[in-house]
Image 1 (spheres, rainbow, N blue to C red):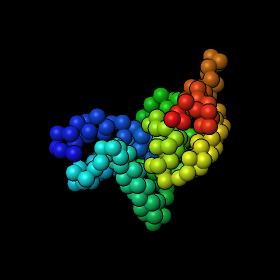
Image 2: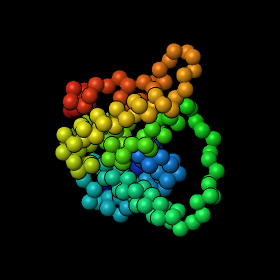
Image 3: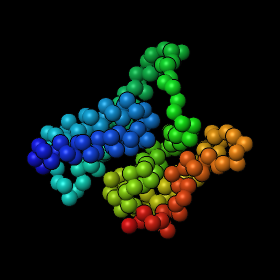
Length: 187
C-alpha cells in the first residue's frame, strides 16, 4: 500500500474504527488513542498490509488488543491507588446510547466483541469468526447469549417514559434482527 492509498484508508476508516473500539471498551478517549496507535503500527507495515485481507480488520484487532492491554494495566494500577478517588464523569449523551454502552460493558468481553463486530461493524459471521479466531458456532452462541443479556440489561436500565415506546428494543443492536443462524448477516 503506497502513502496516498494509506492516507485515504486512514481518512475513511479512522472514525468508524474509533466508534467500534469505543463500543468494545466503553471509553471514547481510550478508543481514539488505541486506534491512533494501531494506525501508527499499520503505517510501519503499510507495504506488507494485504488489501485482500482487510487492513481495517488488522487495525481494529490491534486497537482492540491495545485497549485490553491498557485496561489490564489500569486495573492493576487501580488496585495500588486510593479507591475513594473517582474521576469526574463527562456529560451523558442520549439515554438510549448511554444505556446501550452501559449494557455492553456488562457483557463478557467475548460476547461484547462478537456483538459489536456483527451488529455495529456489520461484518458477516465468517469475518467475525476470523477476526476473533473462534469457530462460527462459537460466535453464533456468543451473539445469541449477548443478545439475551442485552435485552434484560436494557429493560432494567431504560426508564418507562409513559409514551409506550420500547426503548430497550430501539437501543438493542438485535432489535430487528433474527438469530444469527437465520440472520441476513450470515453471508
